[in-house]
Image 1 (spheres, one colour):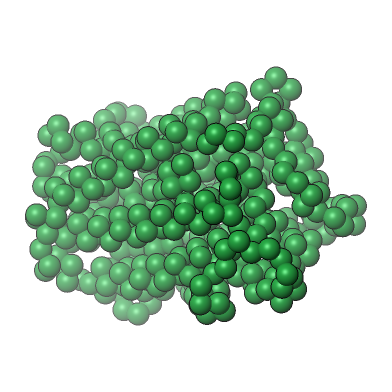
Image 2: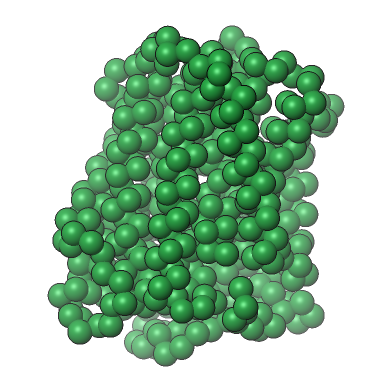
Length: 445
């Protein structure tokens, strides 16, 4: 189940978004950036697993940083997590719109995307969420679709297609590709947020993280090589010369092999939508919980922490998240939205590694059912790569970095002046699990 959740959160990144990095770095630049990010996720995942097994709380990095670094840094880490989860869905919604637009060309992409937002936000409000078993089923279908995609396109692979315009913008293109390489794996850390609902989390969290990461690395390499190898990277970025970057690269690659009218083409696109829907629905749910938790604790406007009197779900938090997501969606800047979500993710990675190192010194006797291998090298490597990624994104995307840090600054000002002095020094959820009213822990899944 944890494998299904982990892969389900992330798998939409295989279907779109990563191809935008090709426009920045070409095949070689994106490949180098992706290799660096794979190393980041290997070292980060094992390090984060130690935190998740030692402190199995639903708040994830919010709880870990609060315990090790104090209330202020706990807030910043939690806020970074909220930004990641709130800005990822509009990018996925744009991809859902782009994929459905293939079947409904008369309906604008943005209309389909907004409709998807309303549908899945409503489902979350009324409490109709996909069970873990259903998430597992649609994730398996999405994985199979990627394997079939690779099986159909790889026979048409030509090495020369990987060499075409391989580094169009030089070394700078490598750094500019980093956010889109991160998008391949963004959201994997969400496994830690279901620690309180996991049977024997001290053992199963490791299995969930490890198996999901291995699956995603294999899929990443397959999709990258098979997608580009058919006709070059430009063929899966631009639908036609001069067109804006596409949010549906796999259909573009498939069309080079099967045409865009065959039954195999349409079948694979239909199955592929399940992967996008799994990630979209799952991250909306995670974003709602993260925002609700902040509101419940008084770290946001208190209304965010209220539950619907009938459905017992965080309706206000879900609606606010949807409003922010639709505003982001209307900009039409999928690449910028992905980059902002990656800023939040990289902040989370940096602070969580500092947290791990601090806890090892601060609480040497803390029960650690799993210890990261090769300590301290793994967390230090993840920390260094995270800092490099942050510097690269700040220097290459200065306006977006100002926007991101502006959000953090405004949120922190709210916290500092209206929350910090009134909140209890003891983190309320440190003493035991807290679940949304009406959502008991499911010990069977």
